[in-house]
Image 1 (cartoon, rainbow, N blue to C red):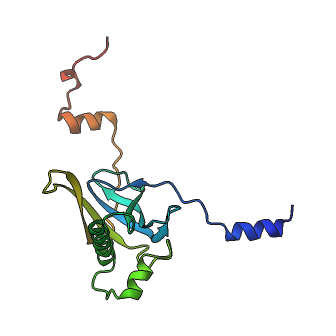
Image 2 (cartoon, one colour):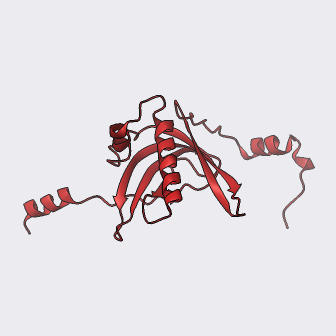
Image 3 (spheres, rainbow, N blue to C red):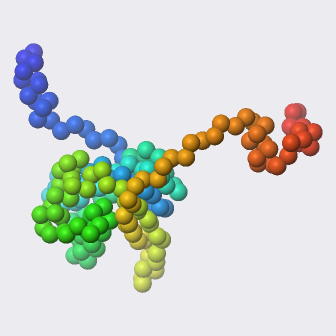
Length: 179
């Protein structure tokens, strides 16, 4: 085995991405890990946002998440809506920055080298109903200057947890659960 050839092949290979779940409900503060546009094997274009949850009302911190938007192969109205969503993500990540063609291209390419990688945004999905009666998620994105600080979890004994929950110091008041 020629290790130089193997090293060259490894260098040219793209590392397998980590498995991410779709961010599809609730409100989450996320750290953008990267953004990229790809072409599928069937020739359809799409854009992927990869992120990690910082805080959420649904997902545990450090959950790897993604969102994907079709840029071809769907109705024109869907492509236009997806482009608006992608632009909203970029504006939330880089508020007040001019978004010319070069800035937008730099934001949606490069994966971890994207210009919005490392930025924090809040993503909120709101359940809506269309004029035709179909339910869908309406996404809103907003800037987050700094990620929320994780609150240290205070260590409590079982009896302290019971006192906090039931508001009693007298253990004789608790029912006997032994059978």
